[in-house]
Image (cartoon, rainbow, N blue to C red; front, top):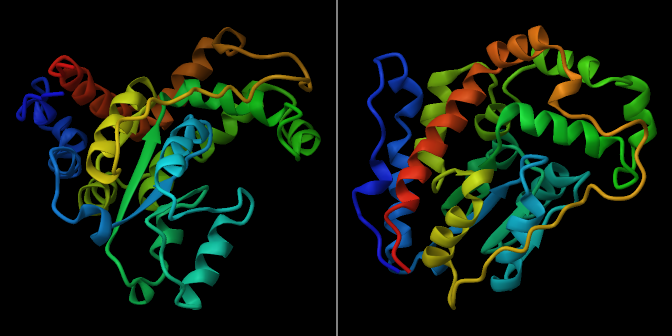
Length: 274
């Protein structure tokens, strides 16, 4: 496979204000450089997958767990605790770690790290992620479904919580949900690119080229939303237009990050030749 080396950093013209969020070139360039082959990348770096809920993280992590034997899958309900205990005991950091752990939980104490870390993650269109999360948390796949449904008996009540506490994906990525400058700084300093759900296969392919010894392994999508559910499955049609507008206004940073990353991968995808 060949790639146009300039295409990863290409982007449509933007205004001065828009440029604040599209300027994630360093983390994208890092992904690009590793995908072309980086000497000793496998032995020098340790990869941590920030698994933001409802971003196809299980399908994504399974590819790397199957190819990188030296890995650690953090417990879904104790990711931070498990990571912290391992660091405090000065345990060896595995080549690949994955789980529901946020940026600030990973870097709680950098003095105990014996390898440089690179973070990877997938983001999703914010409204699509919210609806997926609401449906999932009411299904029998989630252990706290009944408690969740009592707290959020309608999708609009759940949506209001995401308006009052917006930009959840940015918070997972950089530790703050309303700090555009911090988001940009953390992404460019610590992340090896950032994937989107629409282009998750392309992101996986680029990472495998840089960090996996062996042939490319395609992802197998897993849909956990099956079985019984408390209430009916909801869609965007179940949300009033004015609340949709309020949600997008409140979650502007997540929206702009998603659109910027998606734009880069859309341009990049056209440059691949298998």
